[in-house]
Length: 66
Image 1: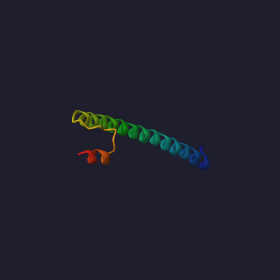
Image 2: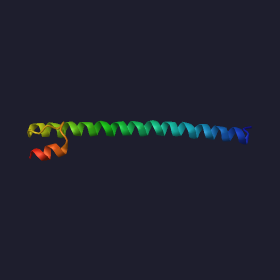
Image 3: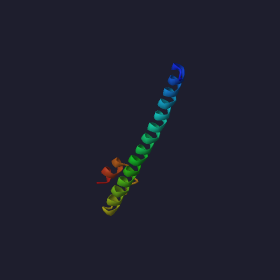
Image 4: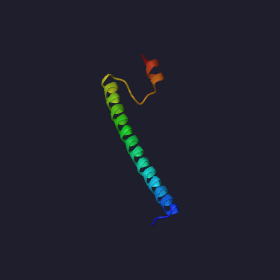
């Protein structure tokens, strides 16, 4: 027979395992979002370069050059 304390310990262990799994899923999702943002920025930089704009400059400096 399982005691109430043993059941509580098992439930706590299960909750901690779920938290760790959720943490891994959140980190994975954030890394995927970051990857997609970087890909988008590369596309934007490529378009800017094609238009003759140096994407390494600040937006304010580029506006001043216009």
